[in-house]
Length: 245
Image 1 (spheres, rainbow, N blue to C red):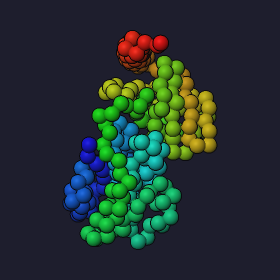
Image 2 (tube, rainbow, N blue to C red; image 1 turned 30 degrees about the vertical axis):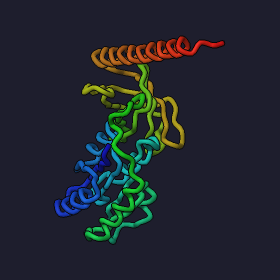
Image 3 (cartoon, rainbow, N blue to C red; image 1 turned 45 degrees about the vertical axis):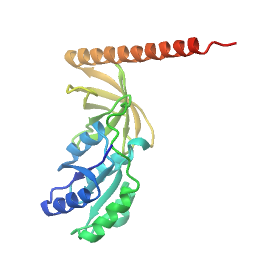
């Protein structure tokens, strides 16, 4: 399986150099230009590396969210900064390597080659986690706060955000994993800790959203039971093949 990288960048010359360097290293690339697009791609797919232009809005948030992923899905993060950007802030956000703009070929290739040693191959064909989606939480008039969905039930969500969440009732929006269906409604943060973990109770969902969620849960349960039956049959076969004496 190949290595792959997600590039959050809008500068054509910078992208051209990055793509050329990644091609030299045998790393496939995918480009996005906004925080929202990067968040969605990171939540739904696996990337060996993430390269983020820190001059773009939301770059720090994207980097922090990438570092919250489980260890087996955590990309190596490269922060592109200029001379006026504080290096410490990039590392504090979760960057593993720094690329200085404007990019110069030799130092860029050298840094990417060093980071490549820590990259894991694309594992998108391996089993998925219990829930892989992104939820957007809105507090008052501020921009929506993204969080990774870690667990879904008919009653609510467990999430992992990049910062502590207030105990609050709020609008929310997320895509059911494995579907194109977006659920929108109102949720209440019933518990939260200092590490950004929180539980959200669905206080209001449309009837259509409730039906879709229930249908998704039924399909999920059927898959679990099917896997359990296969495991049980396998265990029985093994016992029959190796009877105890």
